[in-house]
Length: 176
View 1 (tube, rainbow, N blue to C red):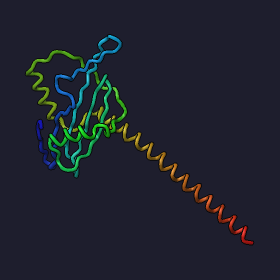
View 2: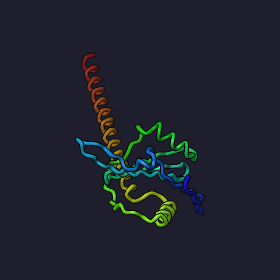
View 3: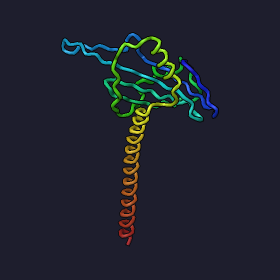
């Protein structure tokens, strides 16, 4: 676990990075028809306490596209529990639609500057605005799907009621 910061509102935010790849595999190489294609993938997991649950926001940037997944944990997860969760539930994660991520040029960074940047990144609270946009997009998509399902159910219920009324009318007519 990287760093824990306690705020005055008894809210604890924990931020660390989890990847299913070893650090030396941050750049993946694929061979496509004899040509090497380099695909850089970055991933970041932010775990924070959002009363009453611990929530994890997993961000994945691949080919300049950002995808986000929100995970709700119950009690405070330990590092190994988070790792196990990802290993066992990776295929169940529902990522948001892709959002174009900000491109950062790859340049050699002084080690001290890198340490300062890491320290600064660990002190940042919450999730990035791009991640929030991606989560909002996913929320909107789920809302549309949910509304379509409920509309279909409502219409099916109306149709059943109509057919029942018609059937009752026929039954009344037959009896005379």
